[in-house]
Amino acid sequence: MHDDLRRGALHALIAATAFSVMGVCIKFAARSAPNEVVVFIRCLVSLAILLPWLLRKGGVGIRTARLGGHLWRAGFGILAMYTFFYAIAHLPLAEAILLTYSTPLWIPFIAWAWIGERPAAVAFPAALLGLVGIALIVKPGLHPIDTTAGLVGTASGILAGCAMVSIRRISDTEPPARIVFYFALLGTAIASVPLLWAWTVPAPTTLAWLLGAGLLATVGQIHLTRAYGCAPAALISPFTYAAVIISAGLGWLFWDERIDAWSALGALLVAATCVLVSIRGQVARTAG
Image 1: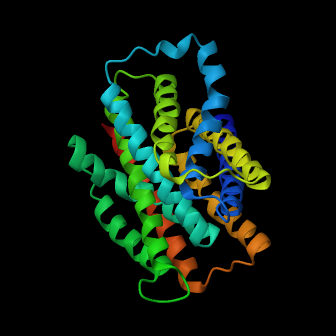
Image 2 (image 1 turned 120 degrees about the vertical axis):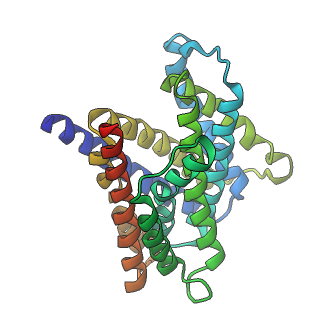
Image 3 (image 1 turned 90 degrees about the vertical axis):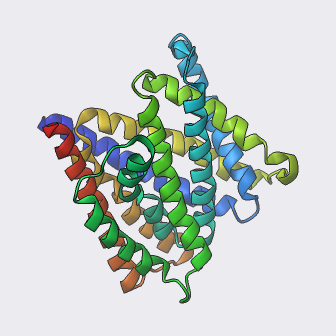
C-alpha cells in the first residue's frame, strides 16, 4: 500500500505540474487568441494524441447505447473548459486554478439533485466554509481582482462537477476508455461550432502555446488517472492541490502575480474543505 501511495503521489504531482504549466501556456495564448479558438485547439490536440492509442485498443468497443450520457459529459466538460480558460486569462494563475479545483465542494449537491445521492452531513458545513473561501478570493465589489472573472472561475468548478457527475451516471455500463474516446471526439466537435463566427488564424507563437497546452493537458489527465488507480481518492486528492502552489510560483515568475493575505486564507479554506469532503466521501463509500 505504501508503494502504491508513493507512486500515486508521484503521478498526482506530475499531473499538478502539467496542469500548472498548461495554465501558463493558456495565459500566454489568450493574449492574442479568442477563447473559442483556445478551447478548440486544446481539444483537437488531445484528440490527435489520444486517437491512435484508442484505436490500438481495438476502437475501445466504441458501440454505445448511452450516447446521450456522453453528450452531457462532453457538453459540461467543454463549458467548464471555456469558463476555466477565461478565468486563467483574467485572474492570477493560482486563483484561477484554485477556483476550478473547488469541484469537490459542488459534486455532492449536484449528485443529490441529479442522481439522488444524498450528500454526507459534512458536505453542508464544508460547502459554507468553501463559499467563504471563494468570497475571500473573488472579493465581490472590491479591487483589484476582476469580480466577473472570479465568478466565471467559480462557475468552472461547478461545471466541472457536473461533468464528473455525468461520468458517474454512465460509468455503470461505459468503461473509462470509451468515456475518454467520446469526450475527445464529441468535445472537439462541440468546440468547433463557435469557430463559425470566432475563428482567427493564430500567430505561430500563439499556436505553439496552444499546442503545448493541449499536450500538457493530455499528459496531466493521463497521470491523474494513473494516480487514482494507485491509491484511494481520499489519499490522492491532497496532492492534486500542489497545482495551486506551483501555479502561484509560475504566476509570480512570469507576471509578478502576488496573492494577498485574504486570497491566501481563502485558498487554504477552499483546499482544506475540498480535501475534507473527498476524505469523508471515501470513508462513506468504504463503509457502505
